[in-house]
Image 1 (cartoon, rainbow, N blue to C red):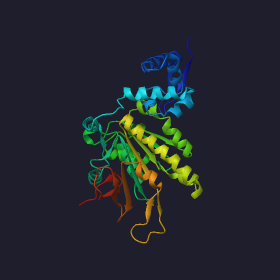
Image 2: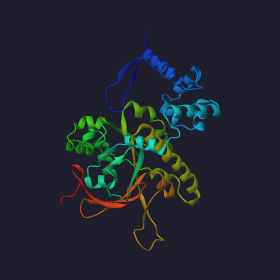
Image 3: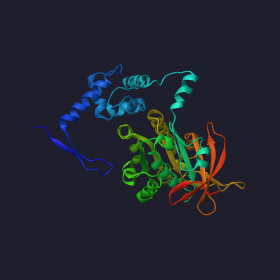
Image 4: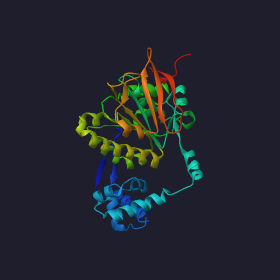
Length: 343
């Protein structure tokens, strides 16, 4: 008689019982699929599945050193497997016209504010990373909450009919706030909460490991939005001083590019919030600068600087984008979420 074991869902649902035979059967089908890649035999496929590389996507976003280190395969073979997976996913040389056609697959999530959506070219886009940075209370986390709910909306209402994966590095996640935003968006608050998958990161290494291990989870749970609130908090506190600047920036750079690979492979939106610091040697203009330096400055496709205005009003300024013109938008933080201020 096959052994039965409990598997708990991270959204708090009742544990389900699965036969050990089902797991074995599932692994066999995964291994069979991987053997279709050139250079992957049954033994190699079993080793890949054992270490969590169960899809072409998860292999394509790996690097040869990483794959070789985890699976014990030679680095040359690891690179060959990665190249094969990328070829299957059409990660190949293409014309600008072909790229233009692929870019039509880019989707957008509404922020809840038409003003802010317009600034972003229609909302927060998939296949890239968007950064919101500003001082405490500027609205970064509130936008993250709103987007986590809006990702669940029907496409015609500015959503992607998917779930959200929320990495909380500062302990600022408030389920009651998500519930309120969901109710204001005419969503079932219970279902909305179950469609936001939350995890508390404990340090920078844990933060990186969470995203590296989330590839299968993203596919299995139809994740359309990944949020990291905030992306630099641990890096800033764990690597103080100029002597630690180089290793910090290198580690942060690898992490950010891993996030962008996730966005591109799975056609999802990545949103990161970021802290700011003062620049004491600046005598003119706004002395606040986003933490992370040039590494973070070059990674996100769109960077939005948030600052406080009167009352609950906030000003969003698009400071960097690969294709959008710089500009500003005014929005409000209300009990129902992110909204446009009354005219």
